[in-house]
Structure formats: C-alpha cells, structure tokens
Length: 459
Figure 1 (spheres, rainbow, N blue to C red):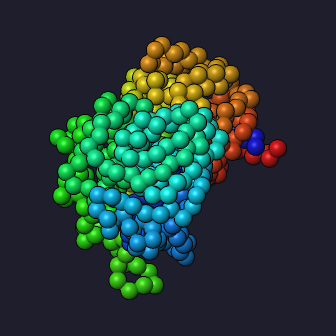
Figure 2: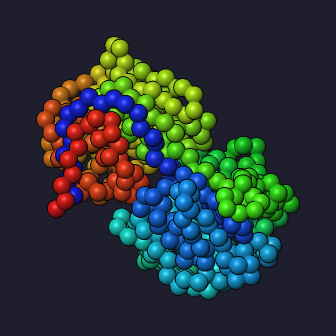
C-alpha cells in the first residue's frame, strides 16, 4: 500500500487510539484471573488481535458486546487457566492449543511466554514478520532455572516450551526490555507463590512496569516493588489474588457485577498526533490520561521544551499547536521511552538548531533497527541525523523535502514520515504504509479528520 501525504494545515479534534500496552496486559490478566471480565475501549490493532488470539489459544472465550466492549471468559476451573489459581505455588494448567502465534508483537510474545510456560504440556510459540528475527534468548537462560524445558532457534522463534513453570527466587537482567519482566510478574502472581522474589539488574522502561503492577492490582493481585527501587519484586502472603479487591462494574444484561477494565488511550500513538499539532496546526487530542503510568507520556515534556503550545484541559483533552515564536531544538532522554524516537525525530526536523536524543541503544531490536532507519528515511527528506554512541543528533530548521520513503515494515517509521510530510515541501509517498496496522490502524483516517491531505493507493 502507498500513502501520499500532501502538505497541510490541520485543525479540529480527534480521539487518541486505545493503548496496546494497556490492552495486551488486560488480556493477560483477564485470562489468568479466573473470572469473566468486561474490557472497555478495546484496541483493534494487529498486536491487540494477536493478544486476543493468544488467550483464546489458552482456553479463553472472547465475545463482542453491543456497546463495543469485549467479554473475556477464562476456561472452566480445573481445565484451563483457572487451575493456576487453584494450585498455589504451581500454576499448572493444560493449554488447549499446541501452537500459539503471537503475530508480530514483541510485548505479546515476551509477556505471554511465561504464562504459556505455566502449561504442563508442550506448546510451540511462533510469530510473524520482524518478530521472527528479534532476539529472545532471555528465555533460553531463564526458563530452565524455573523448571521449564525450552528449545529455540538460536534464541529466535519458534520456541518449543514445556512447563509447568515453578516460581522461586530468581535474578534477571532487565537491560534489553522490561517486557520479559512483565511476563514473569504475571506468571508468578497467578501462581499464588508466597515468599518469592524476582531480582532485576539494570531495568529499562520502568514506567511500563508501573503499568504492569497497576493492571495486576486492578485485577486483585498485589506485588511489592520493594523500596520502589525496581530492583526486587516480592510475592508474599498478600500476593495471593483477592477477588474482592478487583475493580468491578455493573454488567449490562446480567445481574450483579463483573470484573471491568477500561483500556487507556495510547500515549505512544497519541505522540504522533501531538507532534502533528505542534508542527502543522492547533488541534485537540482527547482520551490521553495525563496521570497515566505509560512511559510515552514524557512526550509532553519534549513538546514544552521545544516551545510548542501545550494546554491540558478537563476530561483528558490536550490542546497542541505551534509556539508563537517558533520551535527550538531540545534535549531528551528516551532510554525509558524508546518508542518516542520516531515522533521526536519528526518534531526535531522542524526545530531550529540541533536536537539531542539519548537512548539509541534501545533501538536496535525494534521492528527495524530504528536508529539507522530514521537516519536513512529522514535523510531522503533532507534531514541530517547523526548517531554518536547512545545519542542521536538531529539538525532541524532546514527544508524538509517531500519524497518517496519506505516504512521498512515498521509502524512507527510510517507514522513519523507521515507527520513530517505535513510540513514538507511537495508530496511525500510512503511505501508499505500499511505497517501502521500493527499499532494504530486508524492513523491515516485520523489525519484526514484533522484536515490533512491523505491518499491511499492499494498496489
């Protein structure tokens, strides 16, 4: 698919997409909790669909409701995930599916692998696209320590896993991704262990662990982040799930209440809309909670630092537009929020001076090697980007050309190029533009709603 973006002045308001980070964690919690759950504001990106496919492969039933919400019903107690809660310390269950496909979702695989490992029967876990080339050797090292048999393709998918996972004190490296820890936190919590710790060295993306702990608590599990230092996560006597502590709401068309979770608006996808407003016209973005634990909420600080107009209103509404005196270069540390690199590169392209973004080391194992990909694709548009160790330097304030670029099959590269194209000279044509479906399938339509010139051509 080709998408052509015409330079445009945008205006109006649009709703932020649902957060796939929030959605996928909700799927995991709904699978493990042993109760029917209503999931409101569910996402429909490819990664979200993959997560729903995984939990269905693990025995859950997913039903669509008339109001747009989802009903997730775990397998019956004793035959599926509910058994995890009924055998404290063991978390045994039988996965109905022999093969489970995580799509192209790095979070989906890394989070669900420890949950799948709770099964006492062998399961083959596979994926698609770039996920097949991303390193997963973390589990080659960790799973045998937890009694799980594993066979991988030199640290790559597919993986053959046979549990059951047996939680005990363990120490892990958190420098590559916090997603591995997220999966272990879910699996340990659902196993009902007592007096067990996960120790973590050099944890990255701490805000995503805050989101994981928040979702666990919402569903009735309490895991202690000892000293709030992100170095030890303790599962004590209070860790056993307390159904009475889970958040519930009235169940439509049913008596009583059900577990209920509302998926947050997505700061990762919303960041592209916010940058679009900062460079191409004053707009309003709705549905982004400024109190969210999502790491990419930090985009607000970068927008303020560069001189953009930012105004936070009631009911999770943010007004964003170009600053009165233009945009200026800024410095930003994206080590804990590496997904902000693409939108911030688009922003920096129109900021006078040299912007410095730290955290390049976090970009190598994304859907593409994003440091090099950003340098090359934005280089086609005339933006000079230097890579200096862990720093990226973007020289902004020069002419940005509308040219032919390629998404590299990376959703965030496609969106970054589209945003920059709003202020480029001449049209920009993005090849393999459908990459956005991974996280934000409505992105081009939302640009249209804001008045951007967007033409989609199927090839």
